[in-house]
Amino acid sequence: DEPSALEIGPFHNPSLKGANVAYFDLQLQPDLIARVADYGLPTDRVPFIDFADPKGDLSGIDRRFAAVFSSHCIEHQPSLVRHLTQVSALLEPGGRYYLIAPDKRFCFDHYLPLSTLGGVIEAHLEDRRIHSLANLIDARTLVTHNQKLRHWTADHGDYPTAGHVQYTARHAIAEYQAADGAYIDIHAWRFTPGRFCEIITALHQLEFTDLAPELVCATRPGQLEFTAVLRKPD
Image: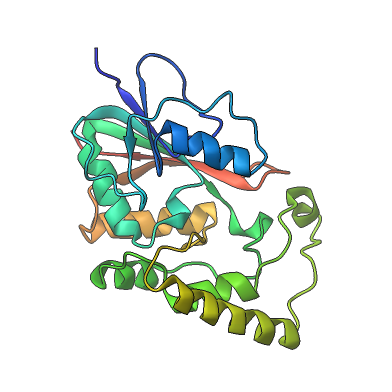
């Protein structure tokens, strides 16, 4: 039987395992192993990659699955609507998209504003394929520590000073110009469980996606991520 589940972005440590699982990543296994090694991470768990695309485009996958899973992937997508559309196309009727996403309150995104429905729709209508300059500047200038337990004790680190913002903004502009249209990997979207549910529900009601929230769980105390399940209609 063909695999009935697809994991997006397993990198060096897949969450799903077994004969019924296929994997998608930005690179095929040999290049992915080299990349993992460059990060100083163990390479013995890098799985065989069934499908790959350097920009994360899922449209070339020619199979359908009962389930798609991703961990810390959805927030990186320049167009959230395109990602949801591509995932839906991979799902069988009644299939589910299981995902894990960071809660911006408890990670390095703490000082950045929550994403909005308007921002998501604007990115879709612009057919955004790379992150906007505004998003890159915000991501670089307002970043803070990523220690979840400190965030849970309301220790979010010092808010960036004006001097820091000016310095990092200049570097972000130079980084954007040097990329010359190439993809820069940052968070495009920042959620809490409640805001994520609101945005996906609205996108579904506005018919931008046929995926609807079936379950969105609260972030557990001491953790920096939440889980959600989106369901495709039968």
